[in-house]
Length: 594
Image 1 (spheres, one colour):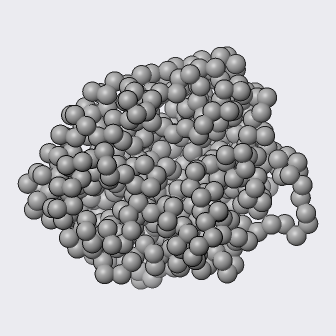
Image 2 (image 1 turned 60 degrees about the vertical axis):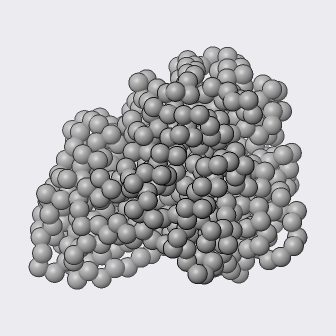
């Protein structure tokens, strides 16, 4: 896991190594172990390394092969790299390192762009083909690894976060009004390729982008998720066996592909607890587990230690539980916002930030349960949507998911788009899913969530917050082979038994009954949900600051309404609307106004 950056130019220009050098300090926390910069003609590549595989200098990046003229920077983990390496060796390729980076380099030399679809894992990379004068940018199927782009003056820059692109300069930082509409409708999700800034875009998951010496771009989708039932009938028991086999394989691969110990983030919920059980069954030795909790509020508990502790005891893990006081949450909140490549409304962003700090002192790699709710239908709004038969797919989705409807956008934003941007976008997505990719409405909802919405909500949040401390988070529930299997499974095995029915069947007997039978839990940070006291004053200061007034993003009457009664205005999924408004403004002050 690392941070990558670079610039590629066309025509008669030369790439700016100085611009890439300005980007690298913004990636240092993603890769604290080593750095590198390589420039030649129209390309400059930069890298910050977190050493997980092949800890030697032979695996340093940028990786350049003088025989083929290929150069590469890569962020992520390729779980099938040993099988690919063996195949390439059989075809006559010789390797000088033992990790996964060189497999991408040699794989391109053998298969060209076809290497991207052969990679099984999480990745973002930039590969320069010197003989063809071409740059290839690739991103994994599930969007676990980020890749941001900025087109500047006859060239393109790319990086693992927006902070690096802003540091290089020359980026249009005007706000994208349509992206804001998406952001405030979809819990801070701005689907690729947009971001809230006009000058920064991101490569879509499951795609690669090829750019030649004339600046001609070719965007290619190499993977699509289909949610169709098999032609031959499959019993519920057979589905359970298939899911367990795929999940067990995903956990095993994420344990084995590392030259350092791998821990587990144990929240006390079904998903992370099941990962602990399967990891131990797959032979994990001296497994370390980590839990964080926060102070309670009258309305909500702030920790789930009562559920995580019994799991750790049952499997005799080396467990660490940390309670974070509320005053530390507020004190550290600016740091968490500083680590955000894009604005994030999820209250657990700061939780993951503080948890990652604790975990990084003990291990470099952890497995995490993100993705299980989206893949296996664990959230309360999925059955609500499935049972709602009124209106078309867009209306059924909107009623149970959108944070704000289109009329509220005009009440909130001074420059709100006239058209219903999010509704129009959603209609396009469902049209494709209904025509070609999904058997039913709920199949389409889950496919959209796992391939698009999740990418820019929990997945990005986990990547940003863990990498802020040089900690690699691996997410077995987003293994693309597991996701494909689950997408074909009938919805009743997902929505049944309160959600994630098939996972509950797999976990029964492996986990304590208290974990199995508890209500659905979240990663609670009550102080950011029920805004009062110092947290309220913090948000008031942000939204009434001179920078906020001069930006003129919000309608003053709307902000006054939220500030007067913050506990009265929540989204459909119980997010604080005041927190959303304050977070975006604070993110802009932190990243753009500097």
